[in-house]
Amino acid sequence: MSGFDNTVPSANAHDVDARAAHWLEMRERGGFGETEQAAFDAWMEESMTHRTAYWRVSAAWERANRLSALGPRLGAPEISAARTRASFFVLKRVVAATLLMAAIGAGGISYYLSTSSPEATYSTSIGGHKVIALADGSTIELNTDTVLRVAGADRRTVWLDKGEAYFDIKHDAAHPFVVMASDHRVTDLGTRFFIREDANRVEVALIEGRARLELADGKTKPEILTPGHVAVATAGLTSVSAQPSSVLTNDLGWRNGVLVFRHMTLAEAASEFNRYNVKKLVVVDPAAANAKIDGTFPANNVEAFLDAVQATLRVHVEDLGSEAVISH
Amino acid sequence: MQDNTGSNQEGRERRERAIAASELEGWFVREILPLEAALMQFLRRSWHNKAEADDLRQEVYVRVCEAARKGVPHPAKPFMFAVARNLLVDRARREHVVSIDTASDFDAMGIAAEEPGPDRNAMARQELRHLQSALDHLPPRCREAVVLRKIEGLSYREIALRMSISEDMVSDHLSKGMHVLANTLYGEPGGGKP
Image (cartoon, rainbow over all chains, first blue to last red; front, side, top):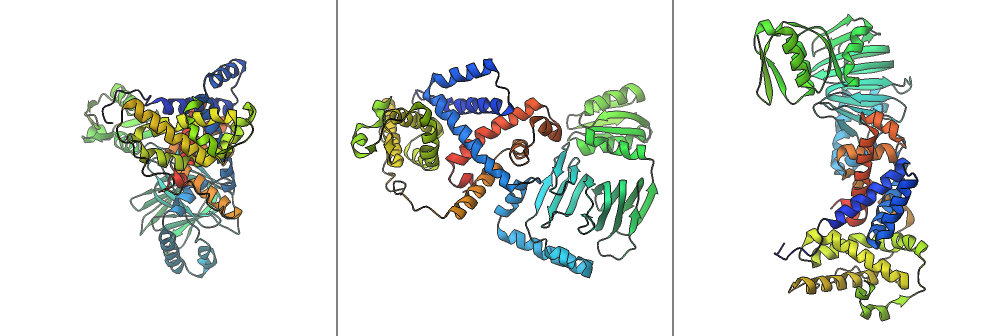
């Protein structure tokens, strides 16, 4: 600005455009009753500025209809985002896929050769939650702080780079759905399951169907998981335990935005909360850490949890803003 | 208002019949909106305050449409740029701006020339790329709502469930999405990608 008095209405265009978009959106939602229609007509009548702004935004929205060519399903723009990055990126993926193929052996060849199409990356921040619908009717739900990549022409291979995801997979024997997490590979055999990756520790819990868990290098005997099985795999060791379905349901509370604790220690509960919130809970003494918690809490409401903890456990909470220190 | 469209232009452009009010929208969308990226480039280069480019753009549209009601300027492109230039001259005079840089004229920018149309397939592909990149300019949640609506064809209710938000929030995201999409689709060359 060069110091003129402001005879030019500076925020005007933005406001008019926003207003025009608002009208269009109301119409899109189907909420144009008689009153709104009259108000809209009056607004349009008011000035040519209003009319051109409305024509413009509605033409843009109309134009965006062509995006449906990108469908069906699977948030196609993520693919496009990958595609618009330089092609060496895609190339790199092909190389990586080829190496993986070599590791997996002959069985994977035809499949991995067909995965040269660009991948899509989905992620959530701390406290985030996202549902991805795949073209084949499968869905994947991402929990807090999670990164998942989808690749392959048929979108049946995903990498869980970190975090946790719930998979509801449409089984297709000819195209098995494969999840790669850390060093492990989980292959669905008709399945609903969830997987959590945390510092090379992979936890797989099976809700329905069957799944196969094995090291990606094929050096271990695969574990076949059935409903209620929870497998915890690290690089060297896989252990499988059976859990009642109620426990698994509780573990999936995050899908509804809640954390369900059953006789959980305060230390464990605090670390669960820390996955979902930027504000971290620190439990400083063993007596407090081992206190048991029961209850269902909104995952993103640390304060409510702290109130409940203070009320029931008689612990001391010192709130430092970015963290809260819990002691006896 | 239409007096400012520049009388020197009126003789040069072939004016066809006056346009009916009902046809004005179609004409504006078809003939004028596709010129927006070039217009914005012209306005940003030629006017001292880039922050006012959107206001100027809006004013150009008003003047062009008011003029079109009397007679459709044909071809539209040189006419619209003449309107834009006259608008800047008016503004400069009113604000006592000493120099306005119309040296970077639209002739020099090559925007007055009619470029040959690419083949239809290439255009369709380009349009899709353009749309995708415009989509990528939306804030993440807003983009998600637009994708669910436009690509997956979901209802407000379904979008709300999918995103775990209220339908009113869906409205907010979509309304914002419409606003930003219009700016990137029309205002930015190549849909906003440099």
